[in-house]
Image (cartoon, rainbow, N blue to C red; front, side, top):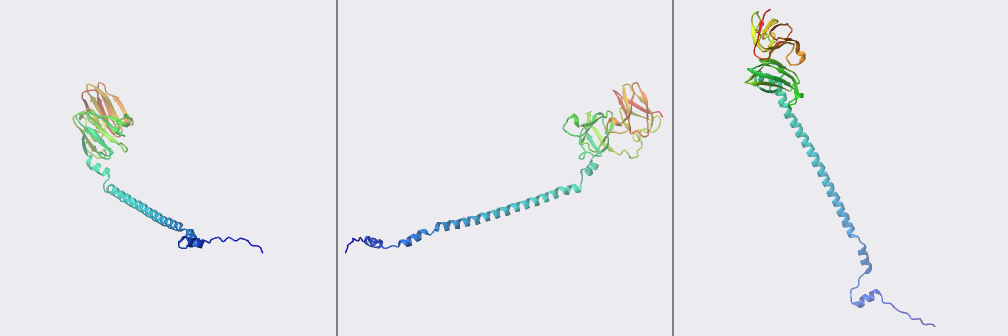
Length: 270
């Protein structure tokens, strides 16, 4: 019989017992370590964060929509407020009442101070009257420039921006007139006369016929078909140097008598 040596190794339990410590179960400890508790907590936090973010997005969307609705309502109310005065009174309605007579010199805004139409301009020392298309002071703004020395007329057209009435001294009286109205003219009979220079309206100041023009320093006399100052209004231009005659037709709008200095006496002869 053969003998073999046998070495008995201590078990874990015996080692623990020998050390005086309480016996523990290694397998239980291993199982406890394998439980991934942090992962479960992390997942819960992520889910909570998603919920919070979702709520914040919903709140932001709701606030933005509410603001858009409030702005839309405010614009609608504002537009209604602006439209109400326009329906009650237009600028033209105000002008018709206030522009019967104005005192210059000065610049009168069309649609505010005056309205389109024909105006008589009177004064002791008048200058030029200008129809304007703009108000920036450039020469491009001047539609027409009309000499109203001695008094005259000007027609403001639709689309004009303003009327500038000048005077070298004193006042300029600007009066709206109705060119279609029937009035008694100042000169109707032979021998009657007016003193110029100036512009005389047919049917209001003078009547159709032949007139003698006398004066020491006469200029040109013009028969006019309109009063807006354009060259198209001039039917004929007659040199009256030394005196002369001019025949006014029924269809003429006005007669403009000019002088370089002094007076011009206009007498009806036929």
